Image (tube, rainbow, N blue to C red; front, side):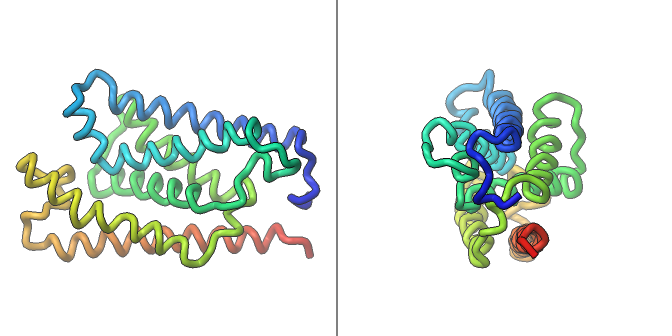
Amino acid sequence: MNAQKTNGNSPLLWTLWLWRLALALASGWAVSLLLEHRSAEQVFDQLLYFTTLSTIAVFLFNLSEVVRPFVIRTGGRNRFESRSPWLRGMATSMAIFTGVVFATLLEGSYPDTVDKLAHLVCPIAMAVDWAAVGRSQGRLHVLSPATWSALLLPYIFFVYPWDARRDGKPMYEFLDPAKDDWPVTVGAVIAAFVILSYLLWAIARLRAKALSPR
């Protein structure tokens, strides 16, 4: 069905809304578990972890889509899905990157609910969302992935080293500013994020082409 012809009260669009509600609840629950039972200083420390930042990004995107039908009065798909995929793409790239790094470089396991939600459920769900749900990703500008990567630079070059000096140890052992291989490692991390971001762009373009009317 052509996206522009979809009725504003279509069951398909409300199914999309329920999916985004589920993601908002899952990511919101993960954020609450990451921050609960902590002092103000501990909350601040936890907010600096990329896992926390990526989960918050997932929550904010999905929350914005959940409230959208109640504040946007125009009909059709635009009532349920923002035309701009920028925040969606940023949240997706961050979530997938978190999941991949946790499973590989950190050799992570998923013993408790917060690990399952933040490192497994959110990354997989956002990957599925990008590849198979909605239409907005097809409008992603070719420069958008570069802007996501640019936003990573202040975190990598300023926030992360500052926190490592303050705490006397890095948040992630493989990414230690005090080691000689720091420039190479951080370069590899940035390159991996850029590649992932543009892979998402390519998937979005291919999907948009496949869904376009013949």
